[in-house]
Image 1 (cartoon, rainbow, N blue to C red):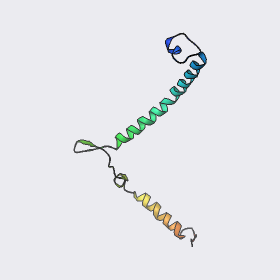
Image 2: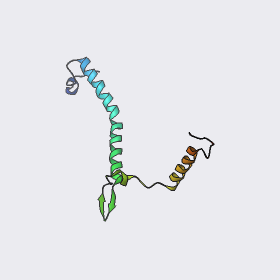
Image 3: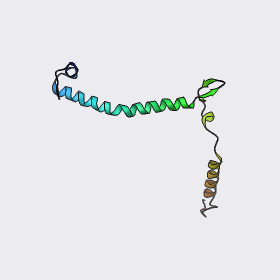
Image 4: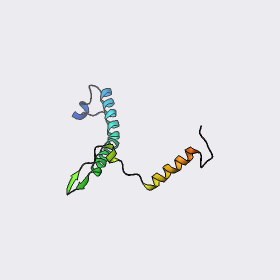
Length: 96
């Protein structure tokens, strides 16, 4: 794989070290796209949380209670059904 160009010669002191460094760099090149996509996704998610208020971009609320959306009616019905199951009314199971 060797070469006499400056880039190759700067990879290491001997051919074995250069090849090892070349292989390490090729592994990094293969992994960076997934890291870049993850970083961009996180940044875009943060940007999407901003809202326009009075013509100005406002960041999302910092308190967790303000960030949690109101529960939907469907979610509330599921919780009611879960409570019935725990009481033993629906499935005939009783807990002591």
